[in-house]
Amino acid sequence: EAQVTQNPRYLITVTGKKLTVTCSQNMNHEYMSWYRQDPGLGLRQIYYSMNVEVTDKGDVPEGYKVSRKEKRNFPLILESPSPNQTSLYFCASSSSDRANVLTFGAGSRLTVL
Amino acid sequence: AQSVTQPDIHITVSEGASLELRCNYSYGATPYLFWYVQSPGQGLQLLLKYFSGDTLVQGIKGFEAEFKRSQSSFNLRKPSVHWSDAAEYFCAVEGEGGGNKLTFGTGTQLKVEL
Image 1 (tube, rainbow over the protein chains, first blue to last red):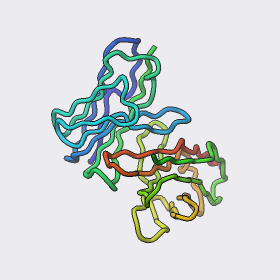
Image 2 (image 1 turned 180 degrees about the vertical axis):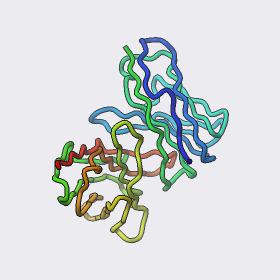
Image 3 (image 1 turned 45 degrees about the vertical axis):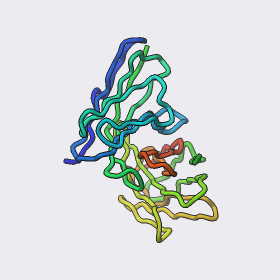
Image 4 (image 1 turned 30 degrees about the horizontal axis):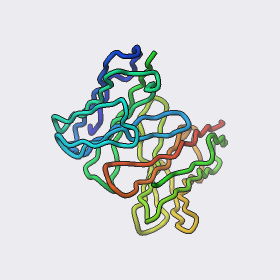
């Protein structure tokens, strides 16, 4: 089954404790991206990647890092999480840069205390 | 920069009734428009999209949407709502620059009364 898999689905952590949210897709898509969803704000793009070793900032990249060492994986790294990063995070992938449908993961709910 | 407005935060309809969810966008050129649905605890699933051509587009689960350039709108409709349609609905626009960057509206939460 074609899918985007995120882990963990739920995480509670404390301020400053580094964490990584993994994302993997099995569709051989070149394009991957991360979004965060907050009440009243919809979804906003954090980072995206056009291919291995090629990444760029989205609208809200502050406090996040990403890497794309393999085509299928696109982890989101929070080096020093803060409470304002408490959110629902979605990874998505696509076969093209534009005018294409994104396949979303099921989401990762992160709480930073 | 593009923007999307979904003026209705919550909508409640009776099962079997018709539904229309509003979406207005701001974008200089012809946009690529999407409607996604999010069920509780799930990711976003595409309902339908508009890229060009016929302004009335059909999607999955009996949904349709009409692109009206003069009104900058892309409203979602369904003639008869089922209880399983209860979910949150997001309108999105893809502007220039690519990067899989969608600008989403704030969402409309649909409740269906039996």
